[in-house]
Amino acid sequence: MSRAVLQVTGVSKSFGGLKAVQDFSLTLEPGSLCGLIGPNGAGKTTAFNLLTGVYRPDTGRVVLDGHDVVGLRPHRITRLGLARTFQNIRLFGELSVLDNVKLACHLRVGQTVLGAIARTLFHTAEERDITRRSMDLLSIFGLDSRAKEQAKSLAYGDRRRLEIARALATEPKVLLLDEPAAGMNPQEKKELRGLILTLRERFSASILLIEHDMGVVMTICERITVLDHGVIISHGTPTHVQNDPKVIEAYLGSAEAAHA
Image (cartoon, rainbow, N blue to C red):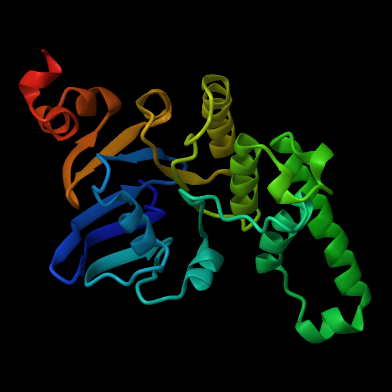
């Protein structure tokens, strides 16, 4: 069996007297596509913030491809291979669509600041390569024709896709998607499902997504973890999770309500 690309063990985080996440554990195998769901306020985005270094866990371990990343800054964790998108889109609106992706590509370049200032031949070639790779990514997302436009000019669904393209530009081993279908219409959600499956195969990345749209989660995720009040109440296949009385109660208030 191959080593897990992400191993989370016993992670907890409290804010004052509020236990936001308690004893959170998760294993992502290479190439897996998993979901993290739960009612509003369940602790899902807090969990993402713990994995990406925005918050430091009070207890527990987060191991990314063999590296313990607890205590590392977010940019260092990204360098090690974990990238994310956000529930609230965080693009550089004044920059072009292309420059948003190029900025992420620069995380992987080897040129020094001195070399960049000197405009060495290596730097020039590297910049051409970054532009080419960025345009290739935009093409995958159908955004190459809008490369020179400001990011803020894009429609909502296109901005969502651009944010995913930017995350992929960092060449992640693990990609965290925080509500990628939020604000999308039914056709856009259908396209997104196909796109996520394609990205998993094309980039060989493990994907963990937070999503409220159960149609998206249940049709593409292989395993699903359910949080409620910061605690994992269920984990398994989509069929198992859908039929788990604890999950039904968390979403509907009681198991009886689900059959009313």
